[in-house]
Image (tube, rainbow, N blue to C red):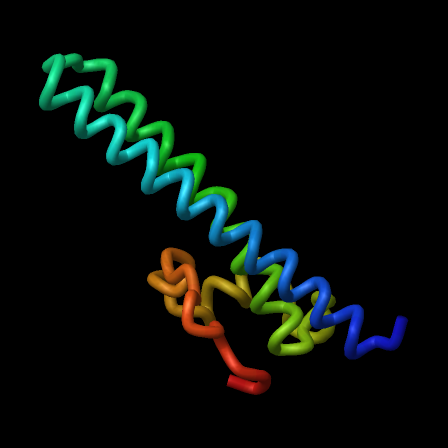
Length: 107
């Protein structure tokens, strides 16, 4: 497998992982809202909080890897560390499922 094909495979895999994390987070938040409204259950709030924390954690991990691959920053020497990611990447990009194709190379 060539480097370009391997890179695209990794990009698709991490983008799918991010979308699944965000989708599951949204699903559990909606479920929690329904439970809260229908049953007035306080545990629904805890479930929603857990879903958001877990979803954002997985989405952040995936967005970090996507950022590294897109920017060609795979090592500390190339400024590809997690602190570099936090400095360079807009935080709301983590919550973007990139349904319309996502970032283009070099952006």
